[in-house]
Image 1 (tube, rainbow over the protein chains, first blue to last red):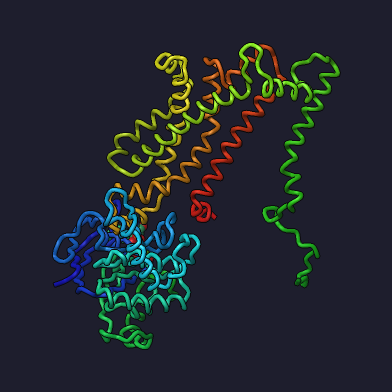
Image 2: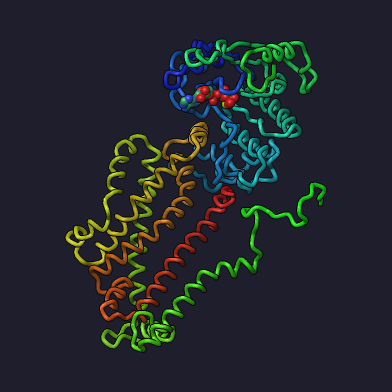
Amino acid sequence: MTAVSVRNVWKEYDGRIVLEQVSLEVEPHSFIALVGPSGCGKSTFLRMLLSAETPTKGDILFEGERLPGEPTADRGVVFQRYSVFPHLTVLENVVLGKEFAASPLLGKLFGKARKRAREEAAEILTAVGLGDFLHLYPSQLSGGMQQRLAIAQALIKRPKILLLDEPFGALDPGIRAEIHVLMLKLWRETRMTVFMVTHDLSEAFHLGTRVIAFDRPRNRPEERDRYGATITHDLAVWPPKYPVSDTHIASGGTTRLLDELEALPGRPGVGH
Amino acid sequence: MDRAGGRPAVMRKRMINVYPTRGAALFLAALPFLLLLLAYLAGSAARLADNPDDKLLPSFASIGAGFARMAFEADPRTGDVLLWVDTAASLARLLAGLAIATVMAGVFGIAIGLVPFVRTTFNGFVAVIAMIPPLAILPILFIIFGLGETSKVALIVIGVAPVVMRDMILRVDEMPRELMVKAQTLGASTWQIALRVVVPQMMPRLIDSVRLSLCSAWLFLIAAEAIASQSGLGYRIFLLRRYLAMDTILPYVAWITLLAFALDFGLRRLQGKAFPWFAQGRT
Ligand SMILES: Nc1ncnc2c1ncn2[C@@H]1O[C@H](COP(=O)(O)OP(=O)(O)OP(=O)(O)O)[C@@H](O)[C@H]1O
Ligand SMILES: [Mg+2]
């Protein structure tokens, strides 16, 4: 049984084809890393998985059922920016998910229920290393802390799928390595399926069980509107159960994909 | 410091990077006021030297006396101390009008901004209604509501609400799409999103919007009072105009300005106190 099944999905914006013929079968508890040049439609693909955008053609199935037409609580998300609510403190940001579920009318908990929800939220926040910052506002946090907050906020809903759009792009290498460890731990414990967009190939191979590359097979200027990007590489990361370390990154599979991606025409940021 | 490049010893910064010291800042901020005061004093002295009975630019002494007469002495005809009676009447109208306008604008603005069905129904309507010059329908308000308080409050509401409402719609539009999606992935219903995400984020912006419309609220108030009223600051200055009583009109205008400034200041403080995250996020 597959967790997510993407069947021949196309996406057009005003007649401009962005994605075409995207098909993908994803096992439950996969960690899918999505890579590809800027503007090829990775975020668009993620937004479709989230139902924040609908495919122009094709279907996306989740556990055998067509995706609902709007975002739901079983699919969590961390965007690159604007992922947390600026008017709520760290703790309130995480409690919010509980309050929505438990209090349809006011969206707010009181008394014992409130205390319990706050304790659970504080626990998750401690797990992501924000236990000492419960009463700060997001604007008082660094970029890395905000992203960890966003992850905690998504996790309290115990989503079956977690979608991450360049979640760690703005972080320095030290914090990034810390969050990687945390992310893998959470992924193992929660057994959710993760889709993560990243521009960092070593991150993709470090975290992913499978690395999917999007690109435009035809990318001459006159072709750009008529042909979209599609999946050009689909690599299982080997070995499947890897240790939480960087050693495997130098493995053959990684370098091969790196070479292939470098060789692709029209990749921005790559010299000839 | 490296002067090997042959630059002058004192490096001149760009204008945009040069700030006055504390003392200089205080002086500079006071300067325009002082200049205006000086210009008035000179003009007043010159006219009074020419004609001691001149009413146009009264001396500070007679302005002070005029203010004291209005603020501390009971009016011989009614027995009221006029300045306070007028202030109470005007503020009651202004605050009632502003409160109703703010609530209306907040509720409808957010509903229109958030719910596509409400938006398609009312967006065009609000855009057209907002274009009606409020003073043009003042006569209609007098006919419908009579010359009492209702018509004056209604004028302020009609003048202020559409502008604030349109601003609210724009502010809701401005909210990052990501936040709306995020709230939905946390399982929020439309009502919960409105209550816990949109309304709290709009409150400080609503205060900004109301602050900007204070000026037009005063305009509508004074216009309504000038045309049909028995009390109020606007009524008084238009009444005093008949006697060319500049010595009381001028302190009244200064008093109105002070009230408007205090209201604006109060709202700004309220915003900072009640929504600390807003000011922090802006810098
Ligand atoms: N709402 C929209 N309306 C019109 N065009 C859009 C819209 N959203 C995305 N696009 C277009 O779709 C293409 C893919 O955008 P997308 O944001 O998915 O790229 P991406 O792969 O995430 O790029 P990056 O790596 O830079 O984030 C771009 O050419 C973009 O201009
Ligand atoms: Mg993107």
